Image (cartoon, rainbow, N blue to C red; front, side, top):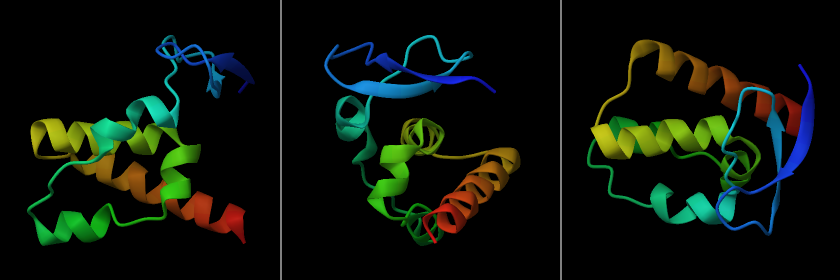
Length: 94
């Protein structure tokens, strides 16, 4: 997969690593406000309790958390892939 850097679609200041499928890339700083919300379910609080660097690195992880905050639930596939990406980032950081 080809990856390249592009300016953030919203702020036009920060560079974001994107692939060819992402038409409107957003940087972490632009999505930071959307990521802060109240999660009442203790299971989901633990699920989303990962290091902030992971959210900075992965637009996918940010989108999953934002979708949960908007809709209040996730599909099984979303949970499965969220866990896979978190494990990859953990192994990458070691």
